[in-house]
Image (cartoon, rainbow, N blue to C red; front, top):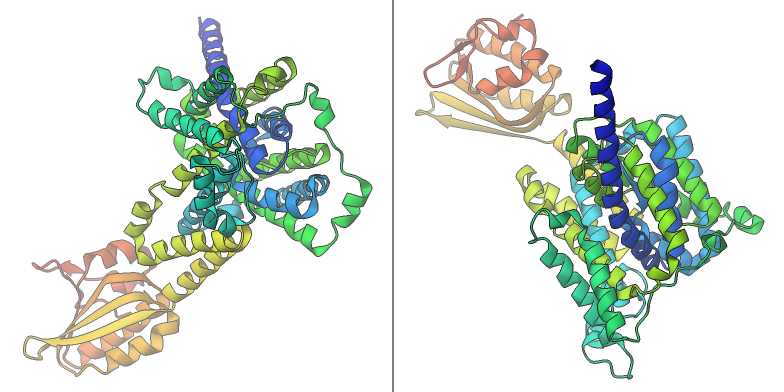
Length: 529
């Protein structure tokens, strides 16, 4: 009976993975082509990356349920590389980026990519959303991006005008109609019954736009997929490999490696939170991504990352093992090989519309509401990161955000506000501490306490302290002993000090603690060794 039950469970797992792989395939197919077009390369290169990300990286991944493929977050950076250095150079740069990821995994750096401020990560995603939206609005009217993020953003009114009333007799308005139709379908699909939502909204949008444009024979741009995928494989030339040792190429490869790794490992962390299966092995995942990107570079495809859209679809569809990710890559390969002519009926504007919709979701993800709970400084870092990404580039913007986070951390752990107030007709003193009481501020704290007149009742409030270290606790212990020897009284006015720092306090600090009727923690015998 045990063998039969085990066999049934295995079959159930395989069935879940099979069904999930089909759902992920349907999500990945239009997104892979859309990301390629947004990156300024043929759609086939996005499909090749999707195949490698599914089959190879799926087999090696340290996060079994994560799905890898061409990522929207790298589109602007890749587009800039293609514009400045050409498609031929892109493969060599991605190859080097993959090698950097492999070396990072060998030196066990995977865990360090998790050490990022949430404000910076949310800012990065929102910034990516702005970049994607501002570039793909132009593609949605059968035009091209205008340059960097700021130029694309400023020229959006021009794109809108082309989509409403083209003056040159072009068909920009027809492309805009199909793009708006695709966005409308995706928005409407969120209100459909749960059973219908099994079919991904992007796929429905692509089908509807393709059917309508075919019926009316709109003369707009359609994607160009080769009948033979092997013809789209371009190995880097030796001259491209030699050119990698120049500073701009090295910086580009490093930027792709860092951004791709951060996005992948953050996505893996999110996948862990979505399911109760095996946890991510970060260095193994980084190694798999490095191997995958190295192969993508050799074949002249797009760079890959772990992608949250596909990964969440995989988990929600019931995937149990890495088999789902591997199968989805096989379905992409089979579809492109057997049915390439079908893809030639898909309007480019429909794929751009998917990315415009994706960009808006990244921008309006509710990050502000999450961050404001932790203070205005977190929101400020979030906003500055977005602005910096749009005004400069993705890597520079992220570095600026990380710099602000480090500055905030240093400020937090070096800033202490001390307020000494006399109450009860001068017979009682209230000492309010806010910030971090560390050895750096110990002289200031000691001076403030020593300035308090003798033989008073001193109440010290710790509610607003984010941290107190051993040095300050020892100083408080010595000061309390001396002050009470002079006839005064010291009262610690916060229970949470005991709960928050119990393990860090000296043994004498925990002696004789009693709660008064007001909830204060009075320590007559405490703070004396």
